[in-house]
Length: 387
Image 1 (spheres, rainbow, N blue to C red):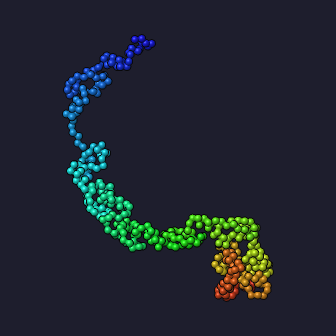
Image 2: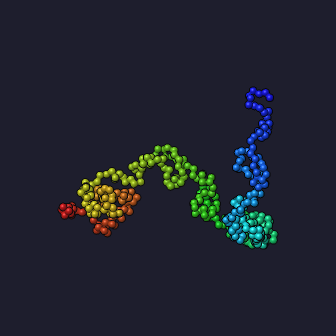
Image 3: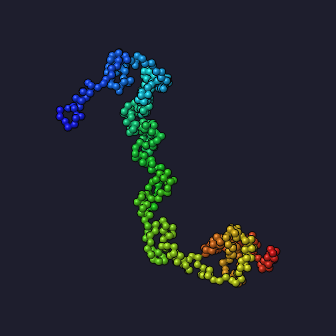
């Protein structure tokens, strides 16, 4: 056999393995059970002690002492504790100590059909899985809500008073009506009648829905159409702008912005316009000295709400009850009131003037005897006492 390398001496791996088996160093041992001699590799020394698996099995059975296991299971039927291997416990969920317990546990149980009321028998496992009907017909009839021929009518329709069959278990959950048309009529009778604010069509809603939201429209389309923005023209600048209908109904939509509104309400356009009296001068006698005497007379408190100077954040305003700026000079009767900033603001609008004039006159007449300030002589005496 010619080769480039001297180490290659075999034509195949089979020849090489046969050669190694015939010439390898083997050790001879005697079997522990039968005494028969057998060969082993040097690496197997101390590990292999038997000539075959059969000998090893027989030897272990002859010399093996039984292991005392602790109970790890309880019988599902009688409750007795017994031992099972971990593999058996893992494989099954039900554990019984004997065949008798197994048979007794699987004895059939008497059950009444939920559909027709007939008595029938099922195994405990079937009962656990939820078997409640004696036949497939009863089960299908229950699911479809249909009557089976041998069952009597047990319900009366709330609308047409026709007698019909309803599954007893469904009575508390369903409306006692014989058909879909009767159910619709019954629901309509309970529903609230409404009129759409946009198209005027009559529609019905469930009372629970009315409690959650005030329904005003019959459909989404009506709601969208009703909330479409309206094109308007500004009264001041003439500019086109858009606004929601509900805002227009509230009185908005005259001006496009606050500056335009303010510009239009200047001067005679303002509802509180009093022929320019607010720009007129006060009587010269209405000076700081008189204001001090008025504030002191009312105890430095607002005549209406009782707010002090500190709470007001500035000196109290002295208000002309008759709205006459020339009150001290023209010889007409006059009275003053010390008011805080918020109360003075409420008395200013033209609409409320008659009301506030009556209220303030009544307070001064009843509580202060018709007087509203200290005279100069009284004020001098008060100042001297305080010094």
